[in-house]
Image (cartoon, rainbow, N blue to C red; front, side):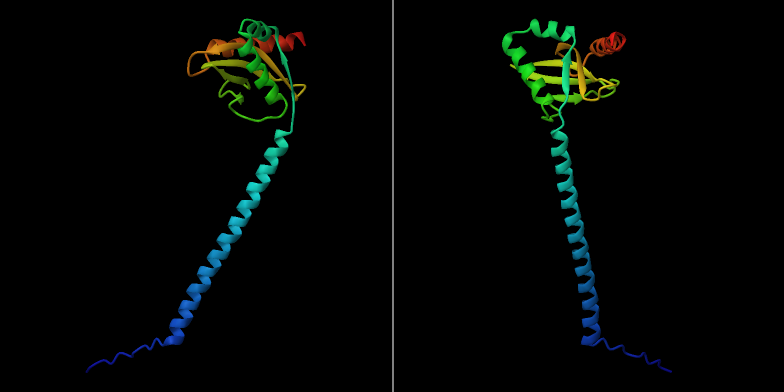
Length: 166
């Protein structure tokens, strides 16, 4: 006995409804992507606004005696460039090439200046009582890729001295 299999008629209505569902799903995905894109644009915009607001924050910088001695030992052009960069950062300009937190150095920061191919560094820290005050401990000419450990140790010792005298 031959089994007769029923034929399934997939007429245009069924195909149309399948295509409609696919189009609807694609439309939903596009709308979802559009909404996500709009949210991303808003987040980026808010982030830019926060960066602008943060860039308006200014702080004071004081130099310990060691910084002044270091600056006095330099050529006038180099000294002026370093002081210019410190003022620039102090007045609200944010650039990690000029003022950067040092990795693994116990909340030490560095003012960075490159002038005539020479890299100058002033190590500094934020005063714990006055959060708008940066204290520069000392300066040196950087000759290696990393900041030498003796310079980090010196900055920590000068920070300790600062708090003892305060």
